[in-house]
Length: 400
Image (cartoon, rainbow, N blue to C red; front, side, top):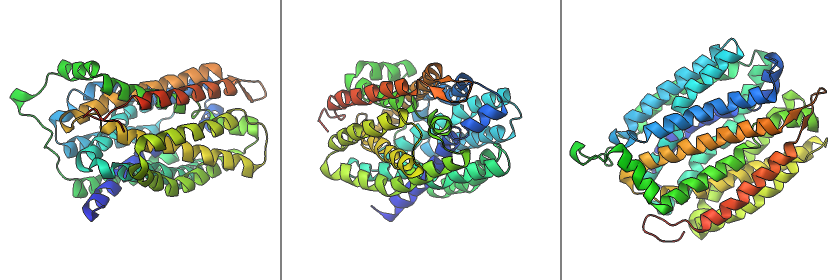
């Protein structure tokens, strides 16, 4: 990989770091937020899903305009809005204000991820795209191993507002790096007379069965993932016996493992085939999902081993999946396609979080019931992705 490509990917990974941490920090703050605001699991599920549903709406409408602009300029606009929304979260005094701030942040943050992937698809050849996706996904690892534990640390020593303020501070130098290292990307822009109508963009995706399969694959994958994520931390505290301060270990261990595994999985998918690697990690992921959602009080090291394997196997699914999905569409409409895909993924993530909140029941003693049923739903959705991925083709009609 060339030095220029590496610098660009590190800059995009920095954007992903702040964006992912902003979303991830909500889950381990769950026990604290439910206690401070005296809210139910359903209300907590709503504040998590509010971000994703908002991101889904903005992602859908941005699909009609994203390919009309320089990718760099649009990225700068979205990142500025994301930081403003995160600042609003930091200053939110009540549950209602926090809910509103999460909706505002989602309007910008949800589209950011799609645009980052579009840029990767534009500048990195498919032969190296698995490795590139591994670097981008490594931002999740850094957010897990450093961002979330540090966020929980300052939340426990100051207040739950502190992690969001920390993110805003981190985002300021990232804004400079975007200006300095992201090139202007305009090759995808049509002349005004040749610019496709918004309904034509949507129609082309609907008519293309392969693009529909790609989007549906990511929707089901996201649904299976986010059905269990929002209540992972509350369940570990209330049912497995974790202290709130020990939740940082879950993300530190999982993040440390994926720092090494994500780049290796990316390289492996480039070498032996993205579909093969995806299939392996889909099957492996079902094991920790079952163990986590059926867990009872256990030793800390056992719980961390299970959660660590979940981080590795779960993240391992997304690296080859994203590489395959970006190859199903041409560069001229990749931004629109990825925005619509991201939009529907966010809707599925929000729906999964909310549905999980309806299934999980909080007992008077604080323990959570029915989490195992959420796990079975997640496993079913995850295994269904194997069938969907087998039918996927690239934009030239070739199998992966």
